[in-house]
Amino acid sequence: MCGITVRVGDGDAVAELLGGLENLEYRGYDSAGIALQNDVGVSIVKREGRLDHLREELDSGSLHGSIGIGHTRWSTHGPPTDENAHPHTDCTGEIAVVHNGIIENYRELREELQADGHVFTSETDTEVIPHLIESGREEGLSPERAFRRAVDVLEGSYAIAAIVDGTDAVFATRQGSPLVLGRGAQKYFLASDIPAFLEHTDEVVYLKDGDVVRVETEGYTVTNVDGEVVTREVERVDWSPEDVGKAGYDHYMLKEIHEQPTALRQTVRGRVDSLSNDVDLEAFPPGTFSGIDRIHLVAMGTSTHAAMYAESLLTENGVDAGSYLAGEYATAPPPAGPCTLVIAVSQSGETADTLAAVRSIQGTDVRTLAVTNVVGSSLTRECDGSVFIRAGPEIGVAATKTFSSQVLTLSVLAERLVRDITGHSIENTGSFFEALSRMPGDVQRLLDDSSARSLAEKYLGSDAYFFIGRNSCYPVALEGALKFKEITYEHAEGFAASELKHGPLALVTSETPVFAIFSGGDDDTKTLSNVKEVQARGAPVVAVASNSSREAIEQADDVLLIPDTHPVLSGVLANVQLQLVAYHAANELGRAIDKPRNLAKSVTVE
Ligand code: M6R
Image (cartoon, rainbow, N blue to C red; front, side, top):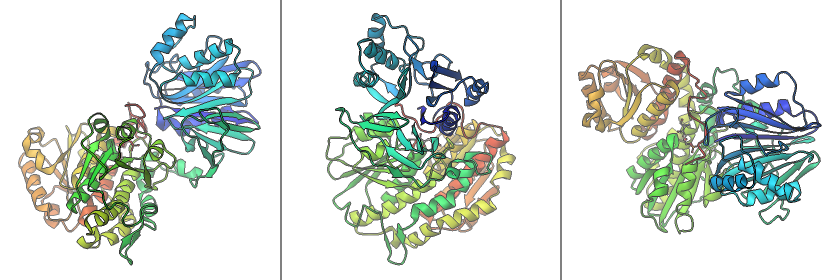
C-alpha cells in the first residue's frame, strides 16, 4: 500500500507534490520521494522515514520543475531505505517511475533485464518498470509506446506513473490499484486518492483498469488496453478541503470520532422513513433480494466486525447469514450458488483480501454487493452492485466513523434483506427505524458527556485489557480490543462473553480491567453472570451500558454510559465510548495515533 501523486501544469510542482503526499501519508509512511522534469533532466530526491525527512531535504529549494511525480511508501519488497524509496530509475537516470501495488512476475523480468545488462540499485519489484521502458527506448520506441509495452508484460496489481527526460508529459496506468485524475485550472493531478489534490480541484476522472493516460500541461488523453482513445466522464466530488484537514483536533482520529453524528446523518438520510415504515435503498427496491436464501459477508479488520454485526442482526431475524474473513474466504470459500448473496464490506474498497474473496467467486452465478465508503473504488467495479456508507473521507489509520456508518448502512440493508427473504421486518421488533433516525443525536449526546478520558487514565498501566459482549455486542468487543491494541500497542483482547470461562479466564487478574458491553436486551442477564465471574477473580469491570441495564450499572466498578436505544443498536453507541477510551489511552502514552507503527490505512496486498 503506497500513495502516488502527480502534478503537471504551469508553475512549480514541488509544494503541490509534497502537499499531495502529506494527504496520502495514511496510505504508507516508511519512505517518500519525488522526481521532477526540469531543464537539467530528471531530478530526484527520496528519503527513508516520514515525509518530514524529504521535506527537510527539499527545504534548501534546490529542486524545481513544473512536471513531477511523488510517492509515499509502505514496504512490500525490501526494507524502508533511501535506495528502496520511490521514484525508481533506469540505468541512465532519464526515466523515473512511482508505483503502488505488486508486480508478481518481477523476478523473471529482473533476471531477463539483468541478462541484457541492466543494473539494478534497489530490492523493489518496481525497479523493473523503468528498465523495461528503457529497453523500449533503446529499440527506438516513443516514450508512450515504450511505457505501454512495459506495462503489457507486467503481472500483478499496480498503479504506475512515469516521466521520461525530454518529454513534457507524465504517463500513467492502473490495474487493480486505484488511480484518479484531477482536472484543475491549467494543471492536472493524478493520485491514489482524491484528498491528494482536493485543495486544488474537485473535478475528478476515475480511470479504469487498463487505461493509459498521457498528461501534459495542455490536457490529457486516455487510451484503453487496445490503445484506442476513450472518454472517461469528469465527475465532481462533494468533499471539501476542510473535510480532509484536522479542523483544530490534535489527531484525525479524534476529529473523525467527533464527525460521527454528521457521518451517520449522511448515512441514514433518505434511507429510513419511519412514517411510511420502510427503507429506501436507492438501486435496491423491495423484492431485489427475493430468491436469495443465504448471505455471506466478507471483510477484514474493523469491516469484519461490522459484517459480524450484520450477521447477528440477520440471523436474529430469520435470515441464514455468515460472516467470513475475506482472506480465508478467498482460498477456501464455503458452498455458494445462485441463491447466495455475497456482501463485501470495505471502507476503502481497495483491500486486497476482500477483493480476492470477491474474485474467488467471479464467473459463477453468485451475486455480489459492495458496501463501501469510496465511490469508484475497485470493489465497486468488481461487484454486481454497491451501497455507499457515505461517511466522508477517513484519514486516521484506525477506522472509527466508518465502522458506525458501515453498521448503520448494513442495518438498513438488513431490513431490506429480511423483508425480501422472510416477509417479516426488523421494525416489528420495536421502533428500529426510530432508533436508526435518532442515532446521530444519540452519538452527539454521548460525545458531549463521555467520561472515557478519565477512565482511560485510571486504568493506564494495566497488564492487559479485555472486552466482552454477546450477540451484536460481541463484534463490538472485538472492535473495542482492536482499536485499543492498534493505537496503544498494549495487550487487548475481545471475547464473546460466553467464551471467557472456556480458557481466557486464566488471564484475568486484578490488573486486567474488563470492559463489558450491555445491549439493554434479554442477553444482559447472562453477560452479568460473566461480569460476576471476572470480578470474583479480582478484575475491575467497566460496564458500557445504558440506563436500561440498571443491574449491570450497579454491579460494575465503573460505567461508560450510553443513551437508551433499540438493543440491536446499543453496540454502535458502546463502540463510540470504546473508541474514546482507546484514543485517550494512546494519547496519554504519546503514541502515533493517526499512523500507528506497522499499519497502513488500506492494505492492498494479500
Ligand atoms: O478498507 P477496509 O475497510 O477494507 O480495511 C480493512 C481493514 O484493514 C481495516 O478495517 C483495519 O482493520 C482498520 N484500519 C482498523 O482500525
